Image (cartoon, rainbow, N blue to C red; front, side, top):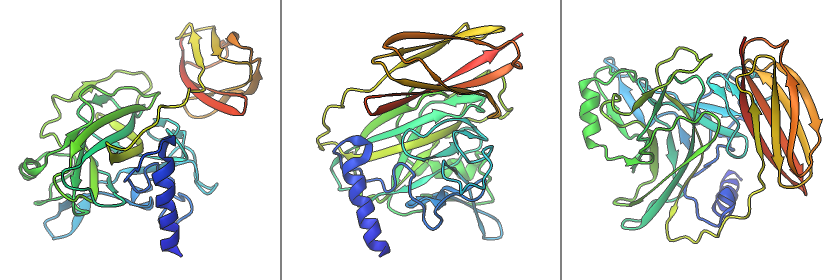
Length: 355
C-alpha cells in the first residue's frame, strides 16, 4: 500500500509541480509529505521528517567514532494544533515571518559561519550527458544579520556527501573541512546577494550530468565566507551573525522538457506610507478588478493589533488611513488577501512605528 501511495505521489509531482508540465525529479519538492507523522508535533523538527529529505549529507566524525551532523529545520502550517507559533510554525517562526511559496511547508538552513546542509532525493537517477535545469526558491530569514551570494548545490550518488574527521565542528572551517572541500564541485545558483526577507527569490542554473546522481545537497561549499557575506543592519534583529535561508519549491528537470507559457497572473499591489510612521499611515491597494479584500495587522510577536477587516475592493487605487498613535514602537506585519472571480492572491508588507 505504501508503494502504491509513493507511485501516486510521484505521478502527481511529475505533472503538476508549479502548475507546469515538466517532469520534476525532486521527491517531495514542496515539503508537503511526511515520512511517518501526519504533522509536526515538536519544535526544532528535523527535515528528515519530510519524505525524501535527510537531516544532513555532511557528517562530522567525532574522536570516539560517533557521528554528528548539522540540522536544517522543518517549517509547516500543520502542527497538530498543539504546537506554539513561535517556533517551527508558520508564517511566524523563530527565524522570522514567511509564508510558503506554495502549499504548507518549507525548510530553513544556516548558510554562513554555522553551516547546514539539507539533502534531497531524486525520483530517478540522472542520465549521463543530459542537460538538466535547476530552480530553487529562497528567502532570507528576518533574524539574519548577514546575506550571502553563491548559494550552491552539489549532486552525489550516495546519501552521504562527505565525512569530516577529527571532531570538526560545523561552526568552524578547520583544515580537514578545507581539505574535503577540494573534492566538491558545486553548481552556483546565485552570483548576487540574496537579501530579500519578504519575497521568494527564484534561483536558476543548468548543468550537464557527468554521473548517475540520485541525491543533491544545498548549502555553502566555499572555503571562506569572507567574500560572500553582506553584513546587514536592521532594527529588531536577534543578534546572530549568520545568514539563514528558507527553501521551497525545488525543481530539477530535463531542460528539453516543454514548459508552456505561464498563465496571466492574478495580481495586485499594496503599499503603506509614510513608512516609518509616528501617528498614522495610509494603506494603499491597487486592484485589477473589483473584489473582496481582507486585512489584518500583527506586531512582531504575532499579537493582533488590527483584527481581520473586510475593505472596499473597487477596481483601481483604494486607500485606508490607519491611526497608530496607540501602537508601541516597533515592526508590524500587514497581511492582505484579495479575492475575485474565484481566484485569490496574498500580499504581505512590513510597517515600522517610530516616536
